[in-house]
Image (cartoon, rainbow over all chains, first blue to last red; front, side, top):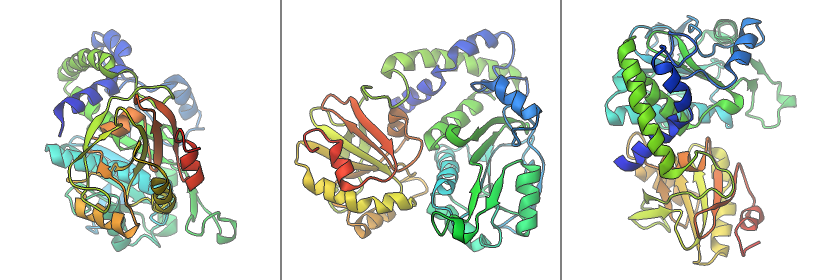
Amino acid sequence: MDRRHYLAGSAAAVTAGVAGCLDSVFGGSPGATDDVVLDAPDRYEDLRESRDNGNLTFPIHADELPGATVTDALSGRELSTRAYAGERHTLLTFIFARCTMVCPTLTAALAQVQANARDRGYDDELAFMPTTFDPEHDTPAVLESFSEDVGAVPGAEAWHFLRPDGAAGAETVVTEQMGVWFDFVPESEREMSNMAYSHNSVILLVNADGYVERGYNGSRVPGGAGLLDDVETLRNRW
Amino acid sequence: MKRREAIAGLGALGVLGAGGAVAFGQLGNSEGDRIDPLELPRIDAPGSPPGTETVPETGRVTYLSLFATWCTICQDKMDPLGEAAAAVDDDVQFVSVTNEPVGKTVDAGEVASWWADHDGSWPVAYDETLELSRRVGARGVPYSVVFDADNRVTWSDGGYQETDDILGHIPGRE
């Protein structure tokens, strides 16, 4: 790795937050509460109001990650989304593997973080929980191959592809418990034959205390570089 | 949480942040931004000899296409890219860069095979530290950027483009 470029990149990523940080260095967390360490996101008050009045259904900055117990497709074991609370930072996203648009991008961003963590020896600080809402199509073999395709190591200790039990299980876990909306699109209404669902594009970055640092959504979803920068800021402040 | 360490870490980052801002300006991809060149490892593949590629190269117009081998739109874009690459002269740097973790969890040979399978015939490199993605503000692939000879961004956009769209953004090839 080119050390100089790496440092420059990290530095730029936090520049935007510097003014806010300096004020709060003496007053506690730069986050909205003491449960989080990343700076409160832009328009946090609006987001919080939407969240509190129920318009925004998935967790955001300073929320506790909801617990849902789901099967880890590759090991076959039951796992809670909060399994690593108290131990590791956790990254979650919600996808279907037939998707050729945003889903591989979301999962590849997690894979980028995994690859860099392994390379730099901090993979034992992180856990990954990509979650399918299309379990009938997304068999363990499909999810393993999808993980590999986007550059992840699905056999790694803390790469858990969560696979709810059937369509009803997906509805319960993803929509009701995690608050991430998805909807089946009948074949006749699809723009592309493989695009079987419309859905929220969400990545959750959850700190090792089990609180959400970032609930990225839609146009705020970062690529691998942006996600990696936020993970590294979280690690540095933890 | 170790609050005291969190605060100490924050202070250090703040100091570093100020230096970073001076070093190369804002993040983002707005037109007119001058991007400091990066030296990226090339993938040994058709049209792409072993070595390094400086992106963007000072003194030449650069057409950069960021891609990933898992990306089906990037796959579809290989034909128009090939036609555009064939239509430009040596005074344009035409280069593709994958943002995949090559050398970490993705093997360079797999990218080279994909490149050959999709008739790639121009230099292809990988964004080892994701620094190029950061500098141009790319959050996904495919993502294309045109730089003038002084490394200023003259155009950038995500998604598929036909050959004429690609050439239409390269000065002198419109």
